[in-house]
Length: 149
Ligand code: SF4
Ligand code: SF4
Image (cartoon, rainbow, N blue to C red; front, side, top):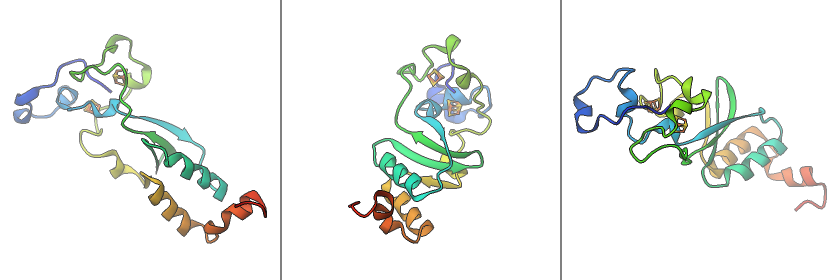
């Protein structure tokens, strides 16, 4: 995650991208614009119903990759990111930022390309649940009892 040096600016296009200059060329410091939270693997209709509620909120998405299920909070830039794309607390940045490798990061391709499943909104998750659970539309009665409506 974010960089010590300034963007390479207009000269950037002519430069060969290397691990050393990549972060300086990364407009918007993409890896400083979101957080991820590992979540328990959702299995039941109740689990997915809760995810549906969460994904209905702005900036919340879900994905699954080879490491499991995650909540993704997007468009939520770190408050330490300066207007020029530098880390304002570079010397004291957290371990997760220090250990983040730019070998293959969002500069190279969108993170979604590595996801097994990706749910950016209510519609995409609801569609998945409909295919996964035959009785998805009847879940309210099951989850809430006969009075559930
Ligand atoms: S997305 Fe990659 S290139 Fe951009 S700031 Fe983060 S680690 Fe550096
Ligand atoms: S602390 Fe610095 S490196 Fe870490 S997310 Fe914030 S701006 Fe990026």
